Image 1 (spheres, rainbow, N blue to C red):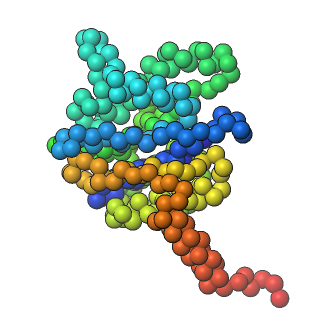
Image 2: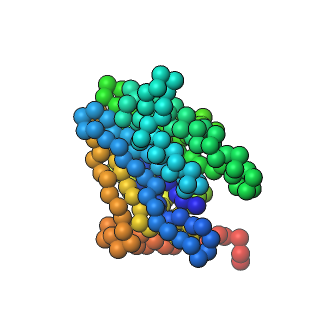
Amino acid sequence: MTYCVGILVREGLVMLGDTRTNAGLDNIATFRKLTVLEEPGERVIMLATAGNLSISQSVMTLLTEGIETDAGMRRTLMDVESMFEAATLVGDAIRRVYGTYGEALQQQSMSFDVTFLIGGQIKDRRLRLFQVYAAGNFIEATQDTPYFQIGEHKYGKPILDRSISYDVELLDALKLALISMDSTLRSNLSVGLPVDVAACRRDELKAAISYRIAPDEPYFRDLRERWSKALRQAHLAIPRPPWIG
């Protein structure tokens, strides 16, 4: 299991993802699930993955090394001309991996489980965020629905539902994403540190932040402590129920 989130706001885009991978209670490993591809001044593309690690790694290999077209050319995420084409290419790569391994997985009673978040901007095009499903189809974030979560999303969702809007400032969106990650880390052992963070500002065409939060990272530790204290103070400030005499 994993937890990844992407938030599209007026100022830019924030994405983050944990790094824990489980293959049983006694087989826990760390793998990067958030990737940043950039050519400063031309494009910045961020991808986060959830689901079966071997599937997501196979898809990422196709996206970076190239998918062969009918004309015998190889197409990568560094070749596409828009973020819509980028999301389409991710869907194509997923379907190709399914064509290779889908039947074998079914024979082993394993599901073809993979989901991607892909967001970013290409020169002269809009900043966009998409969620791509295991069938290769996708949906796009909008001003009304400016964030997506994949993986173990239920613990962090209430935080974002109450606080995120399209007009939230970029660094506040990052802070709220980290609070949602903290809620998930506290409630689910299958999600764990380190956490990878990336952000870009609209029209800058480069990553403004690409950072790994280690277990002893001072800001995140302080954020977790402040959030816990704020919750305790908030619940104490609310009047008690009046129903018991």
